[in-house]
Every structure is written in C-alpha cells, then in structure tokens.
Image 1 (cartoon, rainbow, N blue to C red):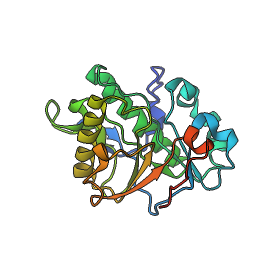
Image 2: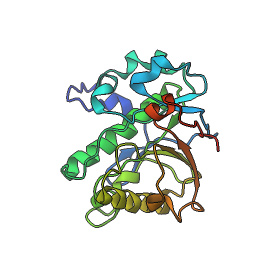
Image 3: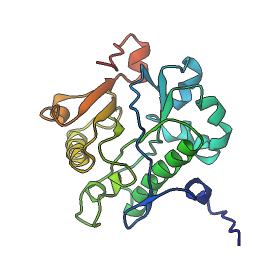
Image 4: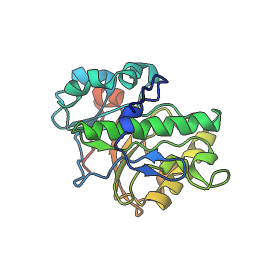
Length: 226
C-alpha cells in the first residue's frame, strides 16, 4: 500500500535513510573525502559566486531559504554548480519548545540526507539550542548531534549567534559537548572565532575559519584553507 503524506514532513526525503537514536533522526553519511572550499556562500547570494570552489551554506535569516526547504527539487540543478552544500541552518532558539528544537534538527538531517541521495556533497551543519539539546539533562541522548557520524567533517556558524555574554557561554558549552560527542576531524566555522569560545579547544580538532559574506565582500581575508 502506498502512503500519501500531506503533512509537510516530507517523508520521501528519508525513505531510504538510516536512523539514529531513539528519536530516529535521519543520518547524513560521512563523506569519504573532506572538501575544504575557498568560500562559504549563503544560499541567497549563490548567483554572485562562480561556485566551483565554494560550498553553499544557510547562515542567514530563515526567510531567505524558506522556499528551498519547501521545494528543494527546484534548486538542485542550480546547487550542483557548486562544490557542495552545508545542511540547512534553521533557527534553533533557546526559548523554543523542545519539540520544535528537535524538529529543526530533523529537517536539517532529513534534507541533508535527501541531497546526498541526489548526488550532492553534503557537510552536516551542527546547531544546538538550549542545554536540553546538547546534554542528557532531559533526554537520554544529545539530540543536537544525532544523525551525524563520528570523526567526520562538520560545520558550525557563529555569525549572529554570539552577541551577548550568555550567548557566548552557551555556544562554548555546546561546542565542547559537540567535540566530546562527535570527535570531528574538521570543523568549518562561518563567522568570528573569539578566544572566549575557542581558546583551549584548538587541539581537539582542525578548525577552518571562513569570514561571513559581508566581511568577505568588504575585503575580509578569505582564510578558509589556513
């Protein structure tokens, strides 16, 4: 019997996916080779970049890529012009109900898996919300890290996420937890890397920094491969 899904959860994205944990979060498989792009290009600026040595990312306001989440097939041909893509960065606010924070992790992994199935190179974006998503204080698993294989390449974004002191502390706590859980070999970082967050973690993985798009276009140093 063929089931028809009209509830917006896009089950067809994960029909072939392996699932992780008791919450059954779809897995984005670790790529066999790690691509270190020249630039990380926000989705809404993709037409301003040649694409050959760039990865598309979603470190920008959700409204700028909402149509992509609803209709990804309409963009796959366009996105294949690039070296690959970082899975979506749907906003995960600390004051959101836990069920919505979990839902955002699901869509991140589900769409990432689907794009892999379409032949695209996909780097998992790791995004956490409040401590319930990156500790086991409520759930028996750290939901923010489900669906990502250990010892792989991942991406994080600091741009717009670390304005206040409490934001910086929460980011540091989540980052340490991510390093403990996933032990990534490479972490792409979109945005600034202040010492308050990253000091003392340099020997835990290889951090590869990238300036945000505005800084890059204003003449910021594109130091992605250093």
